[in-house]
Each structure stands twice: as structure tokens, then as C-alpha cells.
Length: 165
Image (cartoon, rainbow, N blue to C red):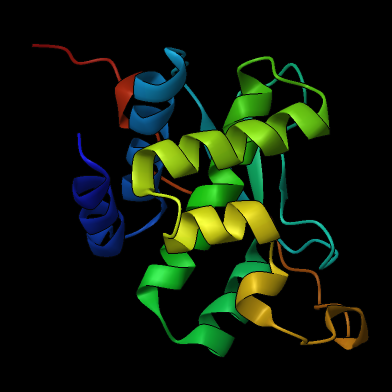
């Protein structure tokens, strides 16, 4: 698939499930690796944590508050989807067994650049981090959110379903 096609699909993605399908597709095409059966949870985490993957599980936990801040500040579906893509990609690489942060950051940029192009929003976020989209917003001065219950994202990894005919 071309970088232009991936970019269009990401721009048009509706929700985490569609972004996730792109993450899996780009990793499979770039690195030849894949894994099914992942689950996504949204939780209110400290703002310096974008997401995490508890090792040994099929879970990815995204920072619901941080996603909300990006949505509020940018008002751009393209940027929100690109941000979600980079977070999900990072944690998916951990789930695939890439543990060292330096290795994962390098792979996130490699997959992003090869899939979307060097100058894409995704690659810019992968290379420069959250500051590339939030600028100088002092995240450390934003009060912590009131804790809500962790929520599971339904229909996240559609390839893990079994079908009975």
C-alpha cells in the first residue's frame, strides 16, 4: 500500500479500531510481525504517560485525558488520529516483544516513515514527540484529572473474534 493510501485511510479512520487496523497493517508490511487478540482500555493517567502495555498481557492502556487534551487543542481529526496511531504503534511494538524504549522509538519512526512518508504528521509526531503537536502547552501545570473508571474499547481488535457459521 502506498504512503498516500495509508495517509488517506488514517485521515478517514473513525475511532480507535480503524486506527488499530492501520497499526497492524503497517507493522506487518514494514517489519513482517503481527499479533492478534489485543484489547484496548482508556484510563486517566498522569499526563507524562501517553499509553502503556503491561508486559505479558494482551492489553494496551491509552491515556484518555491526554487524548482529550489533543482533541481540544488541535481540533484536527488528522492530528488526533496520527497521535493515537503513534501511541498504539509504540505499545504494539512492546507487545510484539520489542522491550527497550530506544529500540521501540526507533521502530515507531521507521514504520511511520516507511508507511506514511518522512514529512507526514505521523512521522513528525514519531520523531519529535507530543511537543510537535502541543507546542509549549505546559502539561505539568495542568491539574490531574478526576479519576474515572477504566473503560474497555469494544470491537477494538476485530481479528481476534471467532465466527460461528
